[in-house]
Length: 169
Image 1 (cartoon, rainbow, N blue to C red):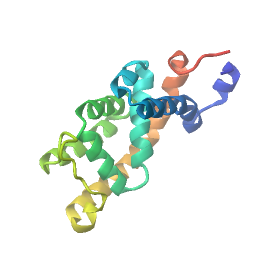
Image 2: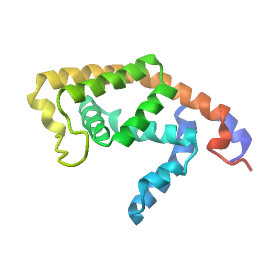
Image 3: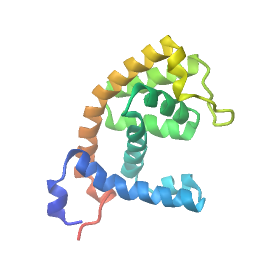
Image 4: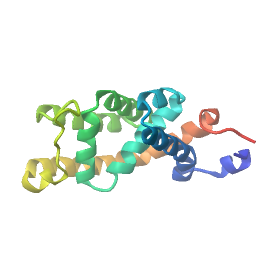
């Protein structure tokens, strides 16, 4: 990438330029049936943090129901949940970290599976559970507020450490 083009990018445009090649490579790894953890370990620290946040963000930003289901899904995969927490801590404010801790507390307290074995969480569970619906509506509102700060910090990080994300020509 040309340094001048890079310097003109900001916000989600900058994130997309850095994230899109990662997600494409990840999809190829999955299609070939290769080990996902080795792919993840091969990224720079900044790429790992961006990758985990954006995979989560791209799924959960649509609705409280998506936040619910994808949070339970990540929670059922402890290495991914821990990587997501690291991303929230690094890029987010204290509010972002507390939000993820609150979601974790809800999932723990309510006995959600901490592995994919027997994972049977339904996206429609909120239809019959007012407490679940109210909790994740509140979590979703908090997420939308935290997300603005996280995207700003991601852009700052990428501009500060471009060598972790792009090669200049």
